[in-house]
Length: 314
Length: 302
Image (cartoon, rainbow over the protein chains, first blue to last red):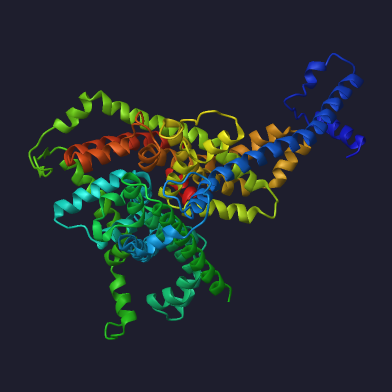
């Protein structure tokens, strides 16, 4: 920007009466015009020059903080992965050598394999359940008018607001008083509950963008409700349903605080096993199990979302 | 209406002609689920919180206010709730500037790595809390990464005792909850029309002023959502205080767990849960007087 441009800008700014923090044209009202303009011009050019320099510095600072944030988020995960290959029982960091010893021990541990299977089964079942209920519920909320709707939205979202420790205690007392023993169904039911708000919000946001005249057109041409839903509505909202199911799976797979009250030996899940191992005997197997859990919780969503993307593109 | 037709579709249509049936399916199914497995259990623990604890950890249905009296008279329980809320405030206060900066960077940056960086934040969401929390033991303990590094560099002569203190708990919680701040801030910053910022600067606004008057107000929804999630999760955290905290760490969630699982005193655990629920509900009520709760949750979850 040439000097002239800056000058004009300063004048225009004064004429239009816009004031900046630093520039106080009224303060120099008693001085002659030239001084006034040069003061302002000075302010602007200094400011402009200052901005280019300072912006760079500020941006560098922002970059640095962002780097710190990422380092702090990723460092622990990297450390766990490296540590899982440490053959020493009480290994310091970094490990002296590398071995698959703890992974081999893991494969032979029936309890852990069982827990991994339970976690996957519960996660998938909860995802389907919450996906189904979430779809129906969000359609009802978007399409229908009923009383207390705004209040009922908060009810739908309440599992997000009530701390999981309370949900855990409440459900345990409730089922026990009803005489329902701990089983995998208990876990699926409650994990679907914990994931439901996410499913509801994700599918609802897609439905808001939905053109309802498409459905009306289908019904005018003689399609019944099921056909309309299957042929028109579902294909359009399917991506959001799949995203919702992935999120519910991830939540279910990692949930610990409430789940610890709901499992028994045969239905235990990976987070509960890891926790009890950390509390009783710190066995390096826990690192291997954590890495397996890490891989599972990242691969399954990536694969599902990848397939969904490929399908929706064709 | 063709009642003679017996195909499934029209029959379904007929059924769906009844408003009640339609309402029970959508939106009823979700509401029924929440009612059966959350509202009803909460009601049951209100009842149980007025019951007596049996000798063998069973619940005896004899009306008593003893559980609440124990809370009211027990200074230690008040302190636990206050400490939990303070921890929530501290973690939120730390996560906000760091998370905001990272979210702002992602929202404004033009780097090709942006999608990778965004993906890494989403991955953080996917990694279970137990893993992210446990990892800090390896990083912060006396023979852990940080101490080995500092000792190796000669910066310290004795290992720092960070692990199993308030500090390790706060660090672990803050980092675990950063994604809850980064993502909503990113979403709201990235929707800001950059022309507005350029216009402000062309008109002579300083960087700070452009930020204060354009970027900040428009990123408020992200901040509100992040603060809500980070505060609720950190104040009610169980894993971080249990695994990373020290002897002085007293948070409500581990205390409820101990009363429930170790003392096996379900009525008192129920009473503590109800008290803590009411505290959170009151704070949320204050919160909703200033902002839209639904919008805040929506921004955070999607």
